[in-house]
Length: 142
Image (cartoon, rainbow, N blue to C red):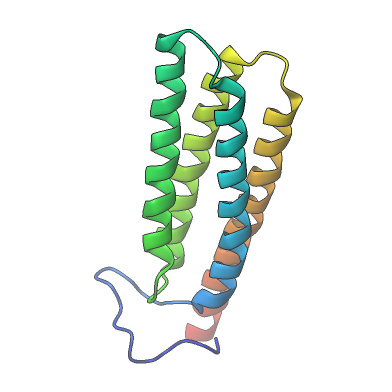
């Protein structure tokens, strides 16, 4: 792919790298949507009085932030599509958990499910792109 700097060394265990720019562009949209979801959750639960349930939301939100940071580290060049994919799966699972925990406090919030569905669709699109890039590289090796 164009945009790959041949001087970037491969990480241990990496078989190939892909152009990070399309991945970064798609990731920006996902991460912005996650940030908006976290802000919306915060605004909706901050007046809730049950510390135990709020603690679950806070812990889940921290896990989402952690997986976002790990994902961001995986897309820096050299960009390994397998590592990016694994980090996306972890981030998606953390988001699912956050929505589940938050839904127990905020019953009947369709915006929560809608936001998660939108983010999941974008993550699926990015994962498909990464898989296609991996397949394209494999085909050029043959």
